[in-house]
Image 1: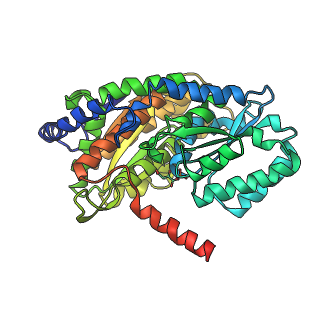
Image 2: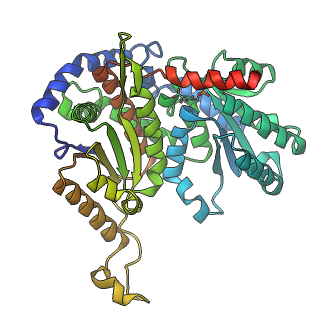
Image 3: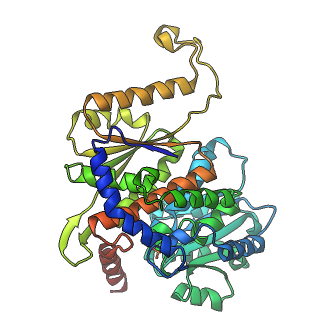
Length: 434
Ligand code: PA5
């Protein structure tokens, strides 16, 4: 991945100053690599954890069937967004266009009654044997209302038809959580999440690895990509360290009123990757208090836009509206494969586009957008992925998770907690229990 920031409105002096400020923390992160899962940043130890791969491998073998059609992931927030990001990038966006490719992943991350009704009728019509499905219930805490309610509803629906459905269930949770204990008592397959690895940093743990490997995604490549990126993001030289640079650009722009980071992604299959990042940035940096307990109410509001689709929905706002955004354009080389546009029916409208490939059109739009942003004096960075593969996705996600750690340092907030989210969880439980 190549990160460029020449149009970010951040000077080399400012970048250097942030690099100097962050280098002791980079030293600290290097030490974290020696400590296993002791530190709050310990998610950086996931790529390269051999025991983790062994436990995931054992669960995969245990649930191995030739007739597998669906992996149902029941989880929310950090427990499913990373998996969905990788799955959608490689397969999910194309699921409807590739109906015979199996297995497919289904995500249940809402208690929306309409979705649950559809799911029940889907089970009735489409699942003919329990061997066709694996259910992965994922909850770090083990007691998130949405996840537990959905798990119970789904198991209730399936148990009627398949009394042995618990054999097709995998529970991923913290070792020792209530969910873990119940699963253990019921002899349900379990995968653990290291205690210090928080939900939104957990995609490279069993949380993401088991379901992704189960649909045939090369998780070794995903982890390799992440590991290589980790080395870069540990560099003390900010110029060699994309996570530090990106944190410096976001932080500096925040202080000049750019409180929104729009992730403008030019591949629709990466929309879920944008949403994964939305949680990562939103929850990690949006804080009421700093590390010293002062009320600060800071945060960068992450948005996700898809090129070129959203140029026709929010393009006007971005180019003409408030100058409150620092944009990150995210794209990979456009595939040169594909049919050339030829005059068929609408020759009179086609004009100079005739003879061009879809990649030429996409390229022209992206370049046009960047020129327009520049002409309007709007700051942006560019993240160019070499391709959309497990290795590139692993690298991008590791880059962003480490960017968050550096941003936490710059804002002096804890990027690993989410105390205010707990407020709604407590209130919901009170209502349901009352
Ligand atoms: O990032 C986080 O920690 C949160 O978004 C959680 O992932 C989310 O609240 C779900 O929690 P749990 O995995 O405990 O069910």
